[in-house]
Amino acid sequence: MSLINISNLTFAYEGSYDPIFTDVSFQIDTDWKLGFCGRNGRGKTTFLKLLMGQYEYSGTISASADFEYFPFAVDDPSQATGDILAVIAPKAEIWEIQREFSKLAMGEAVLSRPFETLSNGEQTKALLAGLFLRENAFLLIDEPTNHLDMAARETVARYLNRKTGFILVSHDRAFLDNCVDHVLSINRTTIEIQSGNFSSWFRNKELQDEYELAENERLKKDITRLTTTVREKAAWSSKAEDRKIGFDPRKTEKTIGRRAQEGAKSKSMMKRAKAIEGRQNTAIAEKSKLLNNIETAEELKIHPLPYHNSRLLSLDNIGISYGGREVVRDLSFTLEQGERLALVGGNGSGKSSILKLICGEDIPHTGQVSIGSRLLISYVPQDASCLTGDLRAYAKQHQIDETLFKAILRKLDFSRTHFEKNMGDYSAGQKKKVLLARSLCQEAHVYVWDEPLNYIDVLSRVQIEELIIAYQPTMLFVEHDRAFCDTVATEVLAL
Image (cartoon, rainbow, N blue to C red; front, top):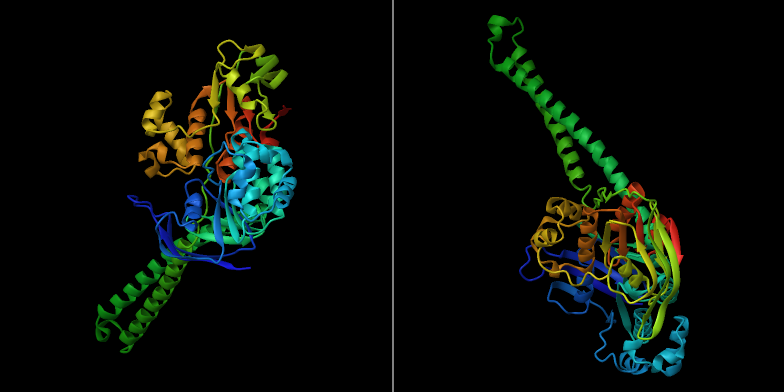
């Protein structure tokens, strides 16, 4: 066991007025299995790259372990997978690699195959096996689940649960619950570490938020009451002071010592007013410490259109092949109005091809695709990496209301400064939110979403779940987040 010490870490990108981190300090135990959470754009990947020494920063980062970043960059993917692993972990014996492969449900034959011929899931597993075989390595694992189907996610979660010494960035709730024992979270104003899995951290956060909101309401009432009281006491004190000074006691009062009595009363009233004002300032100071880390997750809206027929589309005996390999065979299903159909299956099983086919792309196929007359489809593609340019031009290009588009992005935790940036500079999660916000602006009979949650933070996932449950749009979607599918799907079709 050793410690990774982060002390007074401050970092901002060149030309940016907003620092990503300001005077941050905490410790990490190298034996922890650490889940790393936070909303998109908060700096999770940036922090991992700071640990790797890729950016200049102020403050100190000290560690006795070597940091290794996942995904590992493969310079020549045409090489055999075994040769690539020999570079990653040069001291590992072949039997050790085979042992790791066995834990990841991969056969020995994968070692002789060119790396580029492996599926995305197989590549993820192979690189994780190699990196965990490196000596004295503390792994920085950045969103591995985005290329894993449900079965592969469960396999990798079991694998990671047997390991120690890593930071894992992921927004898949079930995945995190199955493989971490601590959670590092980037909040709005702080960074904190808690022991436990994601669910325990999330519940603690909900309890803390509930406490702070209740305490905030109590202090608001106290401040209002104290403000009224201090004004009353000050007025009474001022009145007593006027009575002390503004009359001749020998002419208007029988008691010669009345001036002293009025002076004492004035002093007492002023003292009480000052004491109440002090309590008021204390309450204001305590109130200012609250709500700094409460995440806003405003309600989203969608605009589903009713269709004149109960059946929107159907596929009959569909077959799809690539390079002579059949990926879809004799697939038939219908989508009825009000249904939310989830397509699930392994990587390469043709899920995305089916969605593209329904959306009108030229996908070579056999069988019959029947789409309802004048059916309006809103499509969210899987890949958002090509987004570039400004939001205004994007809204105009897609003929959506710019004000509504930006209002949805604000609800998805975009700051106003992001509206002025080029989309090419957005994080992967922010780009995906742009695609989702565009779809939410569109009136449609059916919403076809291809892995909409890739890179999307947990709070935004919850917002989207609540949106779908509230408005119940007709949907056809592909998603590997089991919690999301269990919550929103009315039917599941396994390929």
